[in-house]
Length: 152
Image (spheres, helix red, strand yellow):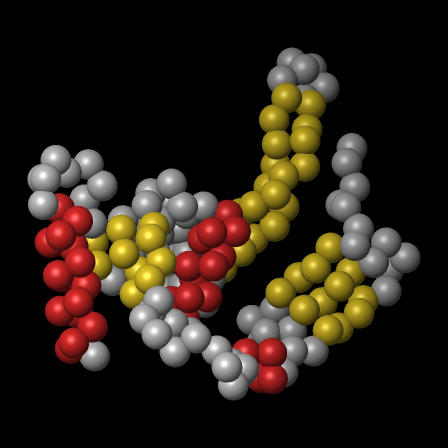
């Protein structure tokens, strides 16, 4: 039998972080808007994030925050990780068959998840076929991005 790893954190829908400790105590860490305010000298130019169906984990977390905060354009393909799911696992070994595996024990949900996109990855603003063979592909892509920025 495996016990949960301590300390572990739970992120509530209200934006609070609850830290559960092995001794049974719970510490609440309050977030405030000052964490999300950009600094005065922050970069003011256009920002682009390149994604593919191999974008997972911390990169997917970054794409989620980037999309939510509307920091720029996401270019590429839909990320490989859905808006919600389970992460981290506890290893298990079945007593009779001795088969080994893992059981996820943390649920995550990105900002913007809803009933429609729940099991889908975050889509790009500009879709790019990563497997195309057009020689002028990058030239056309740059023109497309420039035209997209003119509309904003």
